[in-house]
Image 1 (cartoon, rainbow, N blue to C red):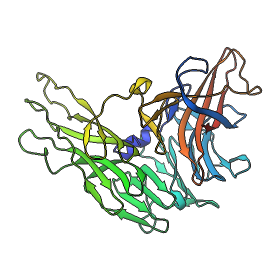
Image 2: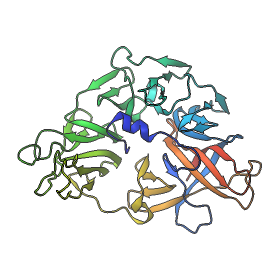
Image 3: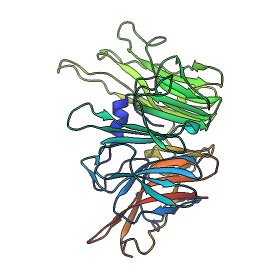
Image 4: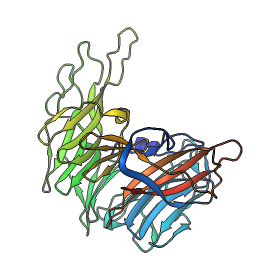
Length: 403
């Protein structure tokens, strides 16, 4: 959800800075007792609190007794100087060493369903392209992953991953290739247009969005070089759906285009796609630039139409994870239901013994929210930032959603 089209841009978004910069899936913006509306019955409870200063940056789950988190005790200039993994075996959390060497600037942890969990890292000193060091967890051990594996297994950077079920996984690679896992093998899937993001609610309800370079609204005098593309998989084949076309008024700027960059799917009748209508820019300075525009469309089960603003506090927020067919988890610890209810998810303060004083302010920042396969559990991975005079520890935490 909400991934950029280019692999480099996507990986760049995953870079984590120092201090208290907000990034990732969910940055909490208020303590309990703020008086803000809360999602009825929803709150985060602590599953695990690391007794060190640091943060958790990503997480993935293979099963209720096989959950992994990526953390670091020290992030310097965006580099994981002391990176490690946390593993839950169904009974306890334990710290594990990284299965790859180096202190990466770019990283991600992805569940690939029954195909395992993939750790992707890029060590990028200075301006060099960087060295990829990837590994795959098969449920038993971590093994180095060849950057060009045999067969159709995804290679290189991953742009987007959508796990419909353990044996139904769609992967978008950095080169635009879409690959599907059916529980026994990977298959490269030809797509009707260029893909920037994937999302789905069921095996026969998967969406891919991006742009097309043929068809209505493309080319001709002053025509856009690309238009929106929204593709739907019905369980048998991918098909383009009809989307609006965009055109700048005269004088038309050079290389105008419209494209989707992300899609969020809650159900067959609740899909939101976003992108933009822009251009590459004028060469001269005397021509007044036309206004670019954001594109927000909704699918109602029949057609695409302009999206209205999300309700309440969700109007300025974006989905970060799907909550089954209930709706979405939004950034800032908010929840949006498909009937339009936007509410804040409650959270607790750190318990005694973790360095936070009673008068401290605390913020829960979640970098990743995942649903645990084989259960109804929803887990978040992130950090509690403590704001107080003197020593103020940041505690890496795993939280569980309580309904």
